[in-house]
Length: 388
Ligand SMILES: Cc1ncc(COP(=O)(O)O)c(C=O)c1O
View 1 (cartoon, helix red, strand yellow):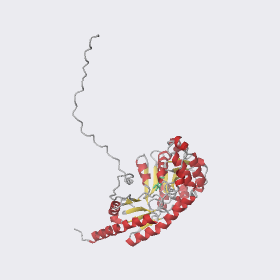
View 2: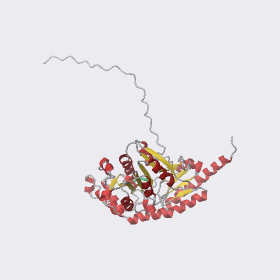
View 3: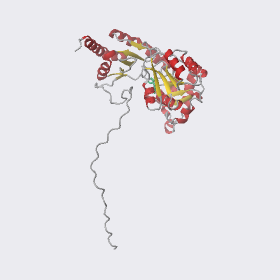
View 4: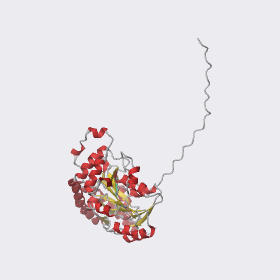
């Protein structure tokens, strides 16, 4: 038997006093944060909330037969070429023009990050879709915000003057605009091009079906510094699948192609997206549902004495004034979610309301009308009361 080795002494490091909790890193604050997407919603009712805060399709998606997927589709990494072809077919373009993306959001991020240079200035009519502001906040880009008119009209003259004087690296136009619903005047891209020959024009057409806009090919043929963003979240009604596209001349969008994650659109989204794009009947039903719901909601708002902006989209911008945030909060507590834009500097006190099919809209109005009437009465009473 060998000699027992002396036990090695393990030297413990001297005990350190416990560290104080590290300070949380300061959060970057965004002026236009989206509402919480998951379960942290301010809803206290037992039934699921009525979501009229995210501009989803006004009608349920019914094509369950599309959900039957070939198992090989699941086993293999995705190939988004069929989706590019379906977009191309729908818009009468060559598939080389189409970069399929994980929703319109990814198309926006790719365009702002890879088609606009660092330090680039981006002219944008406001109010606008929050993703443009959130993405630009994180990048070395400067937004040149141009307020829309009080009737929601695009600030055409101001925008053209700015383009002529500043020659910004990019201009963003949303057609029709979110949240005002206003369509872009049809000759505006051409006028911008004349004023600023090199400026990239980013034309977001997420809501194009509602406005029956289908001249994408014509616009792209006339201008190789114009790119279009499309989404299948709105009229094709498949927001959960996350499908969009960045569309443009292949040389113009090449930097986005080179930088994208190649599998960002998954196989189920490719297969179902092709069907959703081709299903023109379902898309038309969705547009018709929005057209039918719009006057009902506008009527209800008029009865409350609330002015509103509404265009050919699936939402309405209601101007509740000082009572807006209160109304959104109280509706949420009763199970109706609306998009609070009350801090919007151009339209203070605004709330965006998504249109819905009749039963849902009726249930929503049953909550909104009494809540709004009470809050509006309270705010009028406060305004009338003598200053303390
Ligand atoms: C103007 C605009 N562009 C793009 C998007 C993003 O759409 P997606 O759901 O495809 O990311 C939205 C969504 O609300 C939008 O309003």
